[in-house]
Length: 183
Ligand code: S3P
Image (cartoon, rainbow, N blue to C red; front, side, top):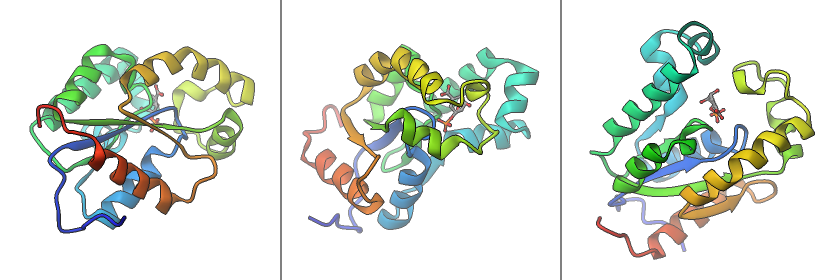
C-alpha cells in the first residue's frame, strides 16, 4: 500500500535508536518521499550553538546538551506531520519520552552491533563512541540502553537488511493502522 503523498499525518514521527541505527537516513528519505517537514535534532542543536556536537559536549558538557534536547522536543510538540531524527540518547530521559508521546508516535530503529560498527567506524562526530568503536563496545552500550529504547517504542523496525524504501513504507503503513490516541 503506497502512502497518499497529499495526506498529512495528524501526528509526528519520532525516530529513536542507537547511533548508526539509520535514523537520519530514514528521516531524510521520508522527508523527500512523503514531503514531511524534517527536524534533525543534532543538526538543529549544533546550528543553534554554532558548534559541532563534540564541541558542545567538550565545552558545555553533556547535561547541557541533554537539556537542550528536551527543550527542542518541547518546541516540536505543537506541530504535526513532522519526521524527527532524534539523537541516540533522547529516549534515555523519561521526560523526553512523555513529550514525544504527546504529539506523535515513537519508532525504534535497530541494527546489530556489527552493522552499527560498519556505519560509524569512520565517524568522529559522536563523542560517546570514542574508545568504543568495536562490536563489543557497541554491544555493551546498546545492552544498557535497550530497555529504555524498547519501553519508549510504539513500533520497532530492524534496518540491517531491508531496503530503505521498504523500511519507510512499513513505518508509514503500520503507523496508519494504529489507532491514534488523543490525536
Ligand atoms: C548520542 C547520539 C548522537 C548525538 C550525541 C549523543 C547518544 O546522535 O546526539 O552524540 O547519546 O547516543 P546520533 O544517534 O544521531 O548519532
